[in-house]
Length: 157
Image (cartoon, rainbow, N blue to C red):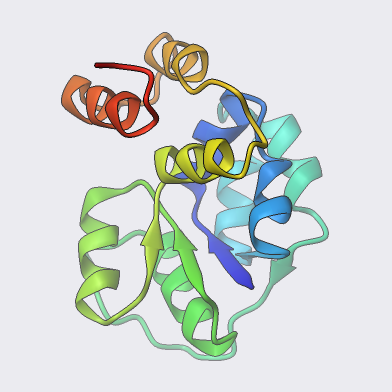
């Protein structure tokens, strides 16, 4: 399977130190150049880890299409790369980008969906400590979503 990753979800998975589960779940992971440039900027959260993780996963898009100016460059390139690579999933946490991609039939998964899949595959034993790490970081995910994920994982009644 092929997963194309956007920056927001990569940052979240880097914060909880679970980037390694992406290959275990999907096999092939790629990032468009714009995403790589975004996550590897020195002033960005998790830049060092993400630069090292992504450096051998960067692909350039072949198309010059910019189909939605309301999306960021990285999100636009990730959607284009998904189509060019005939990918199986787009990893993205940005609400607007997710909705846009889903409207065009792309299969989208977020960082919390990755953690759920990892728990189902027994790659991690608990999600709740990881969610606490995310809550204490600058990543915004609303409390209702956290509760839903904990319920789905069987860690909240």
